[in-house]
Length: 128
Image (tube, rainbow, N blue to C red; front, side, top):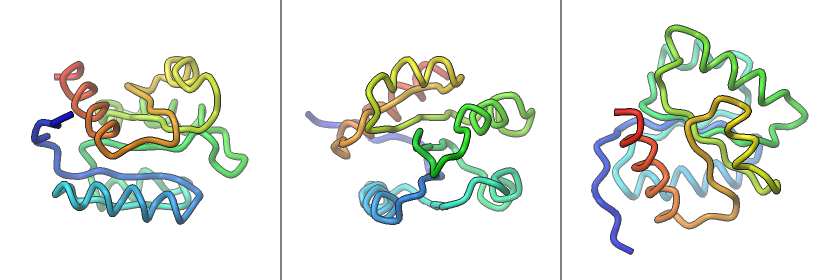
């Protein structure tokens, strides 16, 4: 499948697994995205101020943290609510979780880079 060029420059990845962060970061940087990743979401608002992303990828299983609260904070805060948020997870039912958590999209783990790019494009089209 050929993936179209996606005019979205900055992606923030939030996950508690360094290997996932490294892998996804490398894959997206190869597609000319500017990528930043963090292991800790606690100062996410401050981090977003220094690296304002065009899209956020957030792992559902985040080291015992309440991901629903993170999503709610991001989607109700006036400075971050318009940033597309895609959840990813190896958990069964990630589609339902994404909807319940106010996310704009989801992708189940494991995923191919082409699948990730497709969901990024589809979220972008829906939100524009």
